[in-house]
Length: 175
Picture 1 (cartoon, rainbow, N blue to C red):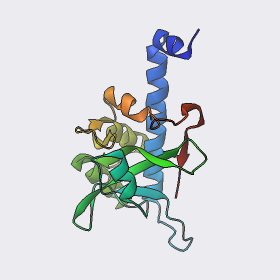
Picture 2: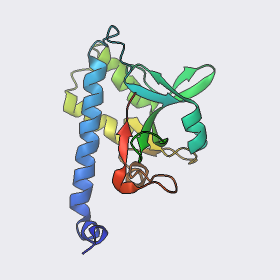
Picture 3: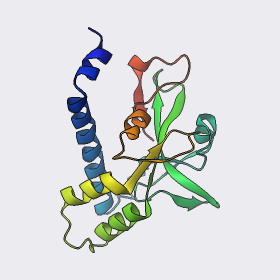
């Protein structure tokens, strides 16, 4: 039986796993943002881009900056978004799989948590709130941003390599 058929037979389990992974990602991000960045290490952990109009543009406008930035933010008069970069050939060819930004509500929640003004929100509560209303994603070139809690976000997060790329060899690329 094909994997796709198995996944279609168990949509609730698939949704639970995807939702759990999304919450884990939000918790890791919150943990990183709530601690003081180590600027002495020379490691810049995130990619960002100022071009959300096309995959090629997103890649050509790619830059590295510190993880404390809350996208969207201004970079040279343009809005910058977090870019998730992938490869299917060991890093020779890279592409932006999807972009991420915070809603105004999400930015407010994270800034309050970072500043110790989170009104008693526990990390799990903050993660749940961010997952529901605070994070949006889209593929470069797509017109609309989608809340992470929306079922359409699953399609965005299911990264597809460009023509000729082998999905079986898909891996994340970090700065």
